[in-house]
Length: 81
Image (cartoon, rainbow, N blue to C red):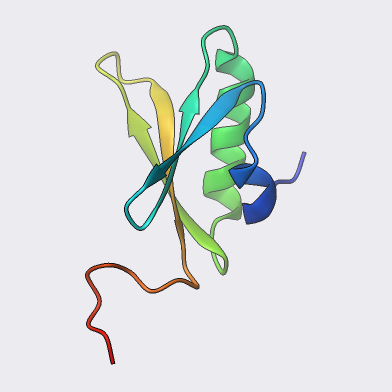
């Protein structure tokens, strides 16, 4: 199942979306570990022109979150014109 940036930002039963500075965090919902793992792996694989995806691990070294940074938006740390 292919996910573009807009689709990822909608959320799904397997994950929620939290607003974060310079992007969003997709977080795994309990009971949907396998589906979230597939979505997270696909998000990382498809990252490129639209967004960057950075998997984040919990204390058990499981990927339970993915930081998504849209590439076409100005970052908070970039100098303004």
